[in-house]
Image (cartoon, rainbow over all chains, first blue to last red; front, side):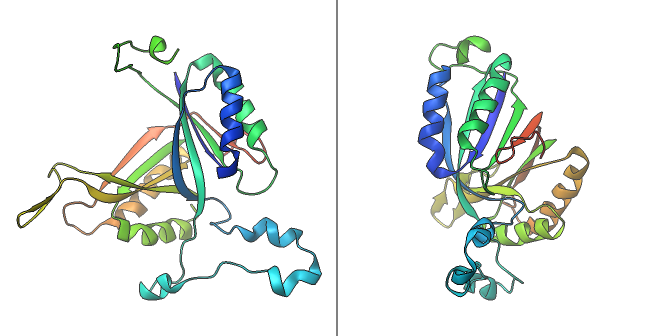
Length: 138
Length: 105
């Protein structure tokens, strides 16, 4: 068994759920999280590049440090972007298929599409019946 | 790769994040959580707090960087009092970037 942790955009959740249902693996855990990646939480990286030059003064707003940084005598404030984290436990042979379809659905080609992690799971037990390992996730 | 999950004091979160960013690890996910440890919460006079607020910081790093990141978190989240939190490390087999579809961190 493997655990797939996908950190994706919030507005892609319904589509992702639909695709997983079609694959026959609808079970997942959904969490509301905040995160940052290589852009350090700056949401305007892509937006700024796509804006026409004529908009520059009005729209090129970069997030700046807030009063939080001043209050806590920090050099700057750490920015975060709201995301959704999906966790699902799947059998070994389905991992590639599910990861591929997750990438296909969530890809927009812009920064902030998210990450997918695959990690091993030793055991899974269904509380209601006490089934172990493969039976409990089937 | 290793997944590092650190349960830290919410007020230390910004310091830890900025320290990690300074060392070249800007990527992480955080979520607010509630939990308790060995002391079963906190007793303040007659009032018992069963679950205390913590921040869970989750980050995935290469094997050789794991010790460094744990050291940074320990350094910045440490106060020396009960309730500083815990760090858990677990293996990650693969990481994909959705934007490019590549299997790299």
